[in-house]
Figure 1 (spheres, one colour):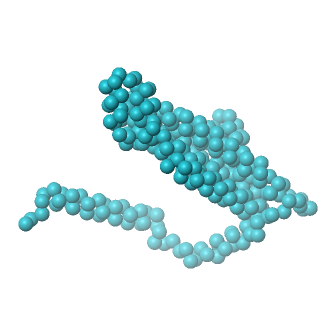
Figure 2: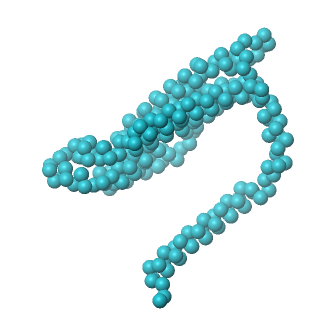
Figure 3: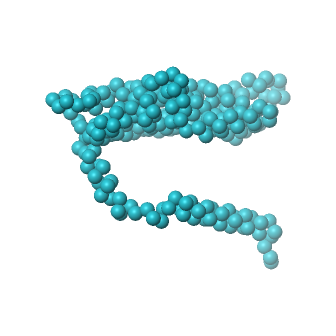
Amino acid sequence: MPPAPGRIKRAALKYTIIGSLAVMLIWCWIGTEMGSFDLVGSGPRIADFLDRMFPPDLTWTSSQNRPFAPPLRIALTTVAITLQISLLGTAIGFVLAIVLGFLAAENLTPHWVHHPLKIALALLRSIPVILLALLFVTAVGLGAVPGVLAIGVHSVGMLGKLFAEEVEGADGGVWEAMDSAGANWLQKVRYAIWPQVAAQIYSLTLFRLEMNIRESAVLGLVGVAGLGLWIENYRRAFDYPSVATLVIVTMMVVLVVEQLSIYIRRKLK
């Protein structure tokens, strides 16, 4: 028997997608000149860079004249500032994303509400967080505040989209039952939608917090206080052992926060 027309269409669509992806990857490979990239030849340069960073500077005091204090003496303060920026920025993003994410869900609001909001969230996500930080540094000056604002705004764009998708995937049966009973919009959201999506929303927020800690370390390149700023200061002073020390500190902070996040997400399930 000949194959069903529907099966032929699905197979044609499948192989068209695979072929298109293959063509795009080849185009990317050629456009990025990956064929001319010589990883083996770059080995000596990588080894030279790592040699300048190791061993890390683990001293507490130094008799030598140096532009900045030993990295271990400032590590605790810089870690605290980085965590403060990340936590406060994530909290701001979470609160705004809860409101905008629910309003951007197609099953909760009319088209004229959720469609513009989805466009706005997409535009927020499209702006690199380091560009947002540079904008806020220009507006309010150096320090921790630009980092909080940049991370908060960027978190709204990402979390708002993810929250809206979670809400759109919720079962509408309870919503319809409460609607027939005369419940208002807020009551239906609170008792029909929120219990279904709360655990996943909390999990997504914790994941975003992990990302924000990593990003806050990068924002030091544009003058945001924290680990990233001191990594950049030591780099400009060509003090690569101190750079290595703060990179290790950053890795340890991210690892601890990630393990705590995994533990909490398991408890939420």
